[in-house]
Structure formats: structure tokens, C-alpha cells
Amino acid sequence: MKIAIASGKGGTGKSTVAANLAFTLARSREVALVDCDVEEPNLHLFFPGSAVDIPVTTPVPEVDLARCTFCGECGKFCRFGALSVIKDRVILFPELCHSCGGCSLVCPQGAVGEVPRTVGRVACSCPLPALTLISGVLNEGEVQAPAVIRAAKLLAQGHPLTLYDASPGIACPVIETLEGSDACVLVTESTPFGLHDLRLAAEVAERVGIPAGVVINRSDGQDEATLDFCRERGLPVLMTIPFSREIAAVQNRGGLICRDLPGWEDRFAALFDGIVKIAGVSR
Amino acid sequence: MIIGITARAEGTSAPVEQRFGRAPYFVFVDTETGKSESIKNPLVDAAGGVGPRAVQMLAEHGATVVITGQVGGNAAKALEAGGIKAYAYRGSGSVADALAEHTAGNLQPLPLA
Image (cartoon, rainbow over all chains, first blue to last red; front, side, top):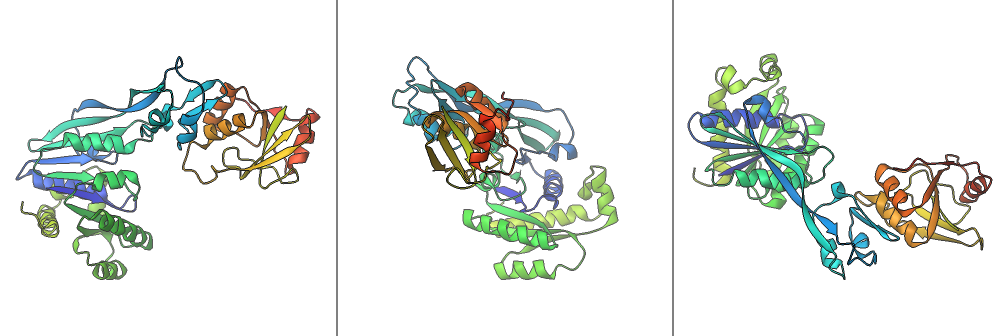
């Protein structure tokens, strides 16, 4: 079973939910936790330990100048500006390349080949006996987040239970993370911004066709607008985490509330039961 | 010599646009014949990588000089490679004003890669 944890908005507590859920589940079974927020992976902060790095490469064009006639077709085709033909020179901006391979297809001379280029890495560790942490890390200045996410997810293949921690927002990296998940947990906070972004995220989950449930974090007890929205859209509220000084203190020192505060392990176990229910698959 | 000037509208009386790759129009002026041609920039709403693509467009139109407000790193690299000189016009005048300033030698070259 694959569970994606997403949130339209950054800073809502997505990683908190992912880390605590993973810790709770790892008490009783094998869990793979995949940090798909490759631009800012942070799950390793909850689970320190030494990791093994695997580089992630993606193909970028290489022009054979012996064949190139500088016709400019590749440059006209590339919508990302990774290839520009200016007079008798072809300029490559590999960091702008999205590896679509179109330039080699449109080249009438067959002068465009492909070479691998490292855009990031996947860090693998086993911080707990039953927990495998796989973190995707995109190199600074690179655009190919989905390639690193794909590699991280690929490495988690074969695990019976996998949690994906998505990046905030609803852009390509999130779609890439949701792809192939059995259920999606949308973490939100009961503020107007939280609700706005929850609406967008819920729509994405629906479009991708993944059953979703909601976790309300930092609740001040006045969640009516969020609850109304969830009822309207048929989104079950799986868990509510109150706004409390005690929880904030645990978070601040990089702790896990399910480990450091009484009662929370049970609540995260109940969250998992709720997820299993919405996913409609047997565990 | 063909000079490309980033502009907010068509024609030489249009105000100069400070942005390079996302300028709404490029006005190309042939300094020998005095003729001008305005091209609507298709890259205004593009997702990214507009700098190098704008340079490719300039090169296709035969421009050897560009006048604009500022250029980004990738655009600078492409301009350098294409042998296109870039000059900064930071005033609020028209394309014609910028051209006059350039002819008078008052414009500073923009640092390229």
C-alpha cells in the first residue's frame, strides 16, 4: 500500500504527519518512508543516521558539430531555452533542460545525441530496525524535481507499505508523487490560506483519481469552514492535531509527538486505520 | 547594422521596455535604411528559459546590437556567444529616444558573461 502525504500549502505540518505516522507504523511492521520534497527534504531531521547516496542522472543533449548545419530547429523546438542556435554556434544550457528528448527528434541531421547529467541524489538510510528512509535531494539550481522523485520512488519499490511525503503546492513534483498512490492524506490548517490551498490540493487528488482524507493541524478548535468544505466534498477528516505549546515544544527540538507525548501513538495508529479505510485496500 | 530594442508596443515611438526576454515587443531598426520592424514577442508568458530564446530570435533577425534595460545570466551568455552587443537604456523614453542616445554614444554596454 502506498500513501501520499500532501498539502497545498507549505508549513502546514506535512512532514510532521509523515514522520510520526512512519514512526508509529514502524513499531509493528516494515515501513518505507520516501521524502519526495526533493527541493527541501527534511524527514532526515527526524531520523538522523548515516545514509548511502545514489546519484540521479537525466539525459541532456549533446550536439555533434561535425553533423550540425546550425539550422536552428532544435532551438526553435526547445520551449525551455536549453538549446539556442545563434549564427554558427549552438549554446547549451543543460540546467534548463527537461530531458524531453525532442531536440534529437526534430534534428534533420541526427546531430543531437544524449549524455547523462547528475541533477540530484537519493539518500537511503535505516534509522529504525523496521524503517527505511529514502530521501530525494535535487541539486541546487536544477529544474528536474520529477526525475529525482521518480528515482526515490523506484528505490522504495517492493516495500509492502510506503509513505510518500510530497512537496508543498500542487505543481509537477506533487503530481509525480501522487502518481501510483493508493490514498492521499491532505494536511491543512484551519486558516483562510489553509482552506484555499486545501481546495486546490483536493482537486488535484480527485483529478489524479486518488481517494483522499484530511488532517487538520494546529487546530484552534474553530475549524467550521474547513469541516464544512470536507463535508461538501466528501473528504473524511482523519485526524485533528490541536494547536498546543506542548506539541510545538516537541516539534521545535525535532522530536516526534507519537514518541514523546502520551496517547499520540494510538492516534497515529488510528489515522492509519482511517487511511486504510479510504483506500479500500486490505493491509 | 540592425539594432533590436525591447519595447512595450509596436513602432519606434513606443516606450522602451526594461526587461529583455519578456519584453512585449522587439523593434528592429536598420540604421542604414532607417526602416523599422516590430515583432510581437511570443515568449512573454513562457514558463522559463526566455533569455536564450529571445537571443536566438534577435540573431534570426540579424541584430548585432540590442538596447534594453537589463539582461539575465543565460541571456548574457547567449548574447556573448552570438556576438551581439547589449547596451543599457534605463530612461523612460521611446525606442527612437533610445536609438538617438545610442547614436550619440551615451549608452553604457551591459556586462555579458
